[in-house]
Length: 509
Image (cartoon, one colour):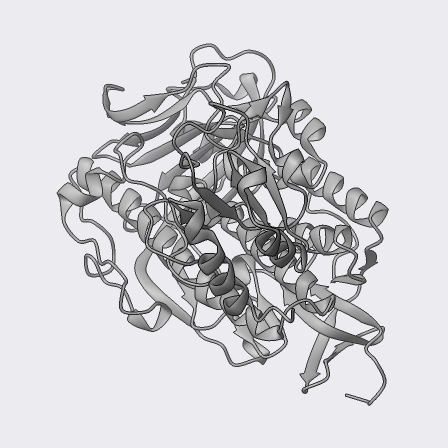
């Protein structure tokens, strides 16, 4: 690095949905951001297809809710069925159902359309999009990062590497992927239907067929997807031939009912990077973790990375907190990713078990502990895995470490988002920390000033809008990414919790 001030606050490497979302969130918070992407065009075929309520909420808070509502389809539910189509475990969603995030539990979308929208929004927010720009190396020191590209060098204070599963950035930094114990080859293909296909399932299905475990996913608009587990002796070349593909789904669809958009064999992996922060560089999305798609959480996990990192970089760049807060990115996101991968792996193994097949190609329950601390829970028996089925009752992971104080059961989970007077309640919280209370006048001036010093505010909740989420006579501290950082059963406890949280963030007040 030279001794001059870096030209931009953040350089984002990789222009897929995770990288562009990270750039957009950073730019909306006022950080100068450049996005470096080697391809000049968007990949025009579907890959990720679903987002849960938490990710819809991230996009809502980025001002994208109107687009999400107009360009997604809520899914009717998901289930495990036997070869005859009989439900083993599953759940249904009512057409107008809203989950605790204030959005449908899961919606389907077409990734090329999502990416086009995100790029347009990022450019409008001030992100400099350098397309057709390949990163060839980087060097960092205590002042910043120099990113080398085929079009010249970029000087940045921080780098977010969201350059995919093969991440050249991760490899240049010498960061290994840690295997979480699942590898299977599956044929994945997408069909654009020519018209209504009422004989197709309305729900996403894991078809536990002893002859061939199969996944069906109804998509947005006229798209749908099948995933079929490859069997011994089957090759990718053979299985991706169009005639073979149509033969495999002949019980569902005839060739004249749709257009085959793509057919590809993927190896479903379960891996997490051994580190997600390397000095001034942060790994995000597939560059940091990969998981089998049975929960639809691959892209969702990457968007969580972006949302987790954006507010922390914002506070650091504004000089409100010490840069030590950035260590919490790895401390929070990596164990969460490991837990999510574990959940997805158990779901995949459950498919095999209910199909009467071997659980996976790797020893059952194998987890490499380099990817997570000693609190990791290794799940290895069928009874526990059954809970990982759709509707099986297993909760999604929460943040177990990082910027949080106390031991309340709701810590590290997203706070509820009610809709009050026809508006999302997040609109009242602002972009920073929020302290939710029933009686704002009961909060001391010192506490109000303390949170104002890091851009936070105290917000009164309408009676009955949060149920038991906000204790009567107490408070809930909500982070900018809408995760719960502290729960005070009594307002007398709030000053101590405030001090502890500000200290954990390295607040400079």
